[in-house]
Image (cartoon, rainbow, N blue to C red; front, side):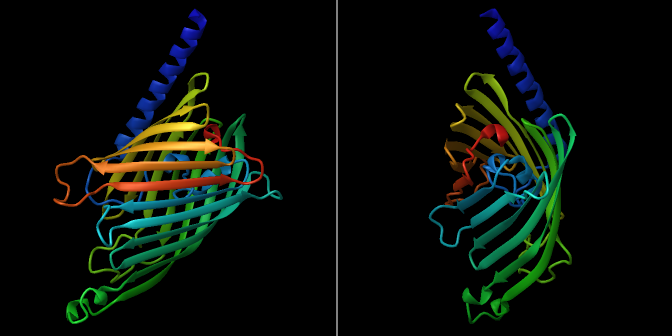
Amino acid sequence: MKTTKNKISARLYKAIRISILIVALTICFYTSYAQQTFTNTQYMNNLTPYNPAYSLMNNGGTADALIRKQWQGIPGAPSTFIFDGSMPISSINGSSAGLMVRNDNFAVENFTEANAFFAKSIQLSGNQYLGVSINAGVRWYKATYSSLDPNDPVLANDINETKANIGFGVIYYSDDYYVGVSVPELTIRSLGNASIQDNNSFRNHYYFAGAFVTKLVDDISIKPATLVSYSRGVPVIADISATAIFKNTLGFGVNVRTNSEVAGIISVAYRSFRLGYSYQFGTSSNSLIGVNNATNEVTLRYCFGNAKVDWKAF
């Protein structure tokens, strides 16, 4: 009994020590502001849209979908749909290729992005790997301002822009942790007159991410994670989360964002599927009066073949 308690204490101490390290790294990147680049609350279960090199951590092919709805009950409120899928390349050891598609809608503005990617890893030692990825695609931005008031000359000029996109990612990982940096959205030239407002869609986006999984006792593990995003002219935003995983099937988590938003997360895995749901809400008194700033987010993962969803493999 005493040996078991000592093992639990050692694991708990290790978890706390690494959690402090992740928080410290997050603070180094942190500046809190209202405006931000796009991030979702369940990033810890699928980092591929931010860093395609993450796909190397899955032994088989996967497909992921995300739907995110903000400001419930408000017409034209922001909504996001993301799909990504990847498959290992059998002829090239330690490699994967895939596709990422994202669509954002906000009132009269619509943004769509599609990228193909390739990732390759090398084994450094034991179970330590270094993976790199490159992605390329296009971004479309459309704003039909004239639909707001056809008689207003200020809103007469609609915008329809298309830009080429390239990106890359680097990730260092083992069986139970990863640390990565990436620039998946790197526009070759600036947008110009993209929006009456200061448009964020065609800026370069930079991400830092880290997570680890550790077992506390049999059938119970915890997974702290962080995601930091930055874009020129847009203040840094950081997400910090922790998930408790029971029998590798049920996960309960919380995500805290440095713009005063908090989310509760629940995930359920069954065979080749994992379904996740999060509810995010603002905690600041500066929220818009009369606007429900709650956000609902649903994710779904499918693992091809006979592979099972495994939090240990992220």
